[in-house]
Amino acid sequence: MGAQRDPQADGRRGRPQGAAAGRTRRRAQLGQGALSPMRAFTAVGVALLGLTTALVAAQPATAGAGPPAKVPPTGVQTCLALDAKKDDWPTPQACADSGPLRLLPKQDGMRSPSLPTYEAVSGHALTECVRDRVSGLFWEGKPDSGKQPWPVLRDGTDGTSRFDMGGYGLQNVPVPGSRGHSEAYSLRGDGRPGDAIGYVAQVNASRLCGFTDWRLPTAAELHGLIDLGKERVSDVRPGRPLAEQSLVQARWLPNTVPGVYMTSEWRDPTSVWCVNFENGAVYDCDPLMERAALPLFVRLVRGPAAPPSGRWRELPNERGVPGGAVEDRHTGLVWRRCEEPQTWNGRRCIWSAKRYDYVQALEHAAKETGWRLPTIKEIDSLAQRDPDGFALPPADFPAAGRETPQATHWSATVCGAQPATSTARASISGWVLTDDGKIYCESRIRHLGVRLVRE
Image 1 (cartoon, rainbow, N blue to C red):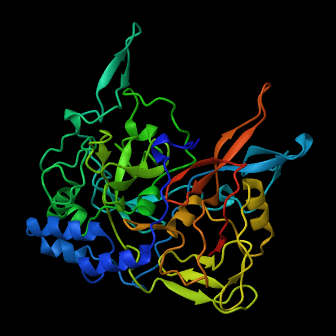
Image 2: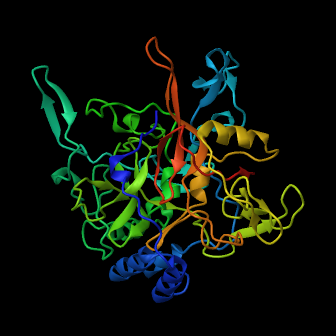
Image 3: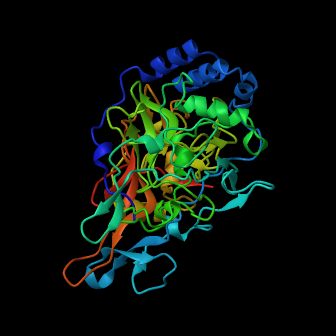
């Protein structure tokens, strides 16, 4: 359950010097309110097709417009417990299980609701659109194209079939006017056939489910669809419905391919952030499908985007110190202003940030009244991804008073859990958000950063 560190997600790159200044210059070049080259690419693609109304409708919601876009649950129902009979060895246990091990409190799987929840849009099939009841976002549904997303091969003498998941093929070529599940798109940003921006314009022109403000999702939005509690299949096969082999709620998101989906966010000028629906990882990929010729699938979204300004509100912390906590008006979450175990003295974060192993992180959070370790989707909602670099917290988050080195952060979301056997001890890992924006499953013995959250 969960993705181990992905080879494609290796090769860390630090944030370049002067990233904030570079981002300001880039936004000025792209125009008022621009967040990334993607907004400029969207404007170009839509203008080419004469759909200026779609561009207006797709602008981000302003701060305070409507209810918060709450962070969806992860689906995880496994927790970390300590086995007293084995010197408190960390062991996986169902979060709802009352024994025999000692469960550490405030873990992800103990929260309610634990599963992603959806509802149908009146008058429309699930292959057209569906609404996330937690975040309020509307998601594009995917009809069956009648093709498999990868070539089908026959195995040996037993005649069983499997996918050749090694590259882009004819089955991935988009059909004009179609939204088929097997179709893959590049991200050149010029609206040409087969380009994702052209696809956005096409869907908005068709008024899918009555809307004209469909857009590519951010990494945090798209990862919000992932059900991390669903058992990962070891080998994707043609004989089973694809959505059942994807880490999603198959009933609500039929025809979801257990492959790599594109987001709207660029890691750098040559790489875009992607979400893997087979294993739940987030990493960068080739938007042209040339360096790594894997098909990139697309699922559009509509609804309130994170506002470009006015997102944060300073609050007193539990000790009454003004500005010691920060409310995210977009998600409704409240964050401690400083990394643990630093404290806010009214002007800056004092002392030094500490690095914790996974058990230490969970135990530390358990002792902090009213606060908890965030889920992987919650910590990701605090991230900023743009071509100038990755930041956690974002550059416009209220200043801590001094620069804090970027760090990989723990979440309260368990992954990679294996019970003990007659020959091996139990093992358990945790989902992490890395210091350069990736999401994967990390060994519990790593010493990483901790930020605390509350509702």
